[in-house]
Image (cartoon, rainbow, N blue to C red; front, top):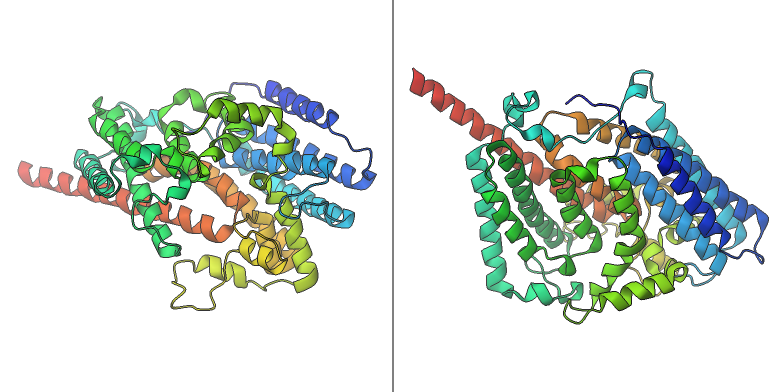
Length: 477
C-alpha cells in the first residue's frame, strides 16, 4: 500500500507536549537537589520531545511513536518526579547523584542514536511516511487486495471462528462465567496455570488465535459486508480474555490492537497519541485495582479520585520502575560486572525448557533485583538496561543502533500489501510498550508466540485460496 504524508500539522502536538512538560516541571520542588542531575533530566526531556514530534510528523500511529511516548513518561516524566520526591521504586531512597548523571548521559546517547537511526539512515528513507490504512484496504474494490495475498478465504474465517468457539467452550466448562467477576490474582487462564514459560507461551498462543479470529472476522466482514464471524469472535474474546483477568500490557495488546484495526478515527490525526497518553496517565494505573479486587468490589470512581489526588506520588510507585531498574543495572554492573551475553542467550533461547537447561538464565530484572537484595523480584528491566547488563556501555551503543533499525523496519512493514502486515502490525505497535519496559525474556517470548500464530495461520489462508483456485480451474477444464 502506498503511504501518503499526513495532512494534519503536528504543531498543536508540539505545543501541547512542551506546555505539559513546563507545567508539570514547574510544580515540582528541587530546592534541595543539585544542578547537574537536573540539567541531565532536562536535556533528556528536550531530546525526547523533539524526536516525539518528528515521529508524530511521520505518522499518526507507529512503533516509533510508542517508543518516544514510553521514553517521555517512563524515562523522563516519572523519573523527574521520583527525583523531586527523593524516592525511587524498590530502593525507596535517592540514587547517588553520579548514578543519576551516568544514567541520563547513557539515555541521552541511546536516544540520540535511536533517533538518528530512524530519521537519517539514508536519503531514500528520509521520505518514508508510514500511514496505517491496513483495515481500509480490505474492501474488495481496492487494488491492494486484488492479489491473492490480501484476500481472506471464507473457509479460513469460519475455521478461526470455530477454533475460538472451541477454546471458549473449554474455558466456560472449566470456569463457568466467573471470569466476569474475577481479578488477575484468580489465576484464570486459557490452559492450566503454571509458572513455567511453556504454559505461559501456551496461553499466549491460544490468546493470539482468539484475537486473530476477531481481526480476520472484521477484515472479512469489510470484504463481504457480513460481520457474523466478527461478532462471534468478539463474544469469545471477551469471555476468555476479560480485561480484569489479564495483565495490563495484554489488555493493550488485545483490545488496543483490535481497536487500531477496527476504528479508523483512532488512526487519524493525533487521536492515537492522545488516547495512548490518557492510557499511560490514567487508565494504566486505574486498572491496577483489578490485581486483587473483583469488578463487583472495585470502586472505580474512588480509585480515579485517588489517582488525581495523588497524581505525582503515584509516579513513585512500582508501576513506573523502568528508570529505577535502569539505575539498578548500572549499580549491578559496578559491583558484579556484565553477564557477557548470557542473559541475551537465555532470551533468544526462551523456548528451551529449564528442565533441559538447568542453568538457563532467569529474567534480567529478577537477576538484578535478587543480586542487589531487593524485597520483590517481579520487576521490569527496560530495553537499554538489557543491553547494558549483557555487554556494558558498548552494548548500549550497539543496542541503540539495532533498536533504531528494527523500529524503522517495523514501521516500514505497515506499508505492506500482505495480510500478515495488516493483521500483525497494530498488535506489534501495542506490544512495543511491553518490550520497552521489559524484561526482554518474557516480552520477546510472548510477541514471538503471537507472530508465529499469525504467520502460520495466515499461510493456511493462502493455501486455502490456492486450493480453491486449483479446484476452480479443474472444474472449468
